[in-house]
Amino acid sequence: MWHGVYPAATTQFAEDGSVDLAGTQKVLGALVDDGVDGLIVLGTCGENNSLEPDEKRAVLKAAVEAVGGRVPLVTGVSEFTTDRAVAYARDAAAIGMDALMVLPAMVYVPQPHELAAHLRRVAEATPLPVMLYNNPPAYRVSIGFDVLDALADVPNVVAIKESAPDPRRFTDLVNRYGDRYMLMAGLDDVALEGLLLGATGWVSGLTSAFPRESVALVAAVERGDLDTARAIYRWFMPLLHLDAEHDLVQSIKLAEQVMGRGSERVRMPRMPLRGARRDEVIAMVEKAARTRPSLAAARAA
Image (cartoon, rainbow, N blue to C red):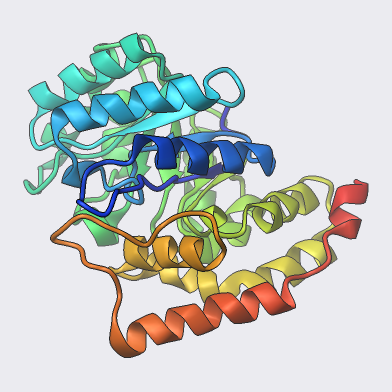
């Protein structure tokens, strides 16, 4: 695990706002068919915190039914309290998830010792491997060295999804911890920098719209073909910037819809993009589709 491209897959909704399990399975299956290496189910793009507890479990069961065994399935653990996070982690393991992506508890901004205690409790609740999700801009808390030091003795805490916007963090992590924690690039518009500085894979949002290009980008890095990697990255960058915006979920789902891969429907308080912003994102996706790079060189490797 923790190598290659792991899209943060979307959860699909029906016109009445209910979870569209069949539509979600179709999205997941198409991503696997296009060559991704794993899937994040119910991360930010999966609208984890907009789903009821029973809906979350239903999505996990649908994912296992659709693509279980084909690629590793990782679920986001994003709850308001530690006890709820522990219960969810245990249920996810029982349902058949292969790993957990554990976030800080929502809403409350913890002190470092509180954050470390929360992450430890969740990790120790199951034997599943755990990837910690560090995203200071989104969650107002950083999983700093003090927290990582405190968790170094927890054997199943094995990876970090690094979404801090400063790519220097990758080098600092490698210098301090060596190979103790696997690193995954987690912010789309610094993904190439992360891959070059020590990340072994990429948890991506825009892969949901352009999976083959994402797979080709990582493959080019892995074989040392930086000319191809840079060309794909430069083509992709206008869209990758969307991953750093507050409306990333709506933008990514709209991109999916434009590319015929899903629906832009989201659950409130999010609402579909409208007006100039919607027109802007559609134009960006359509331009990317027209100018997408040839993947012949990437496939040849």
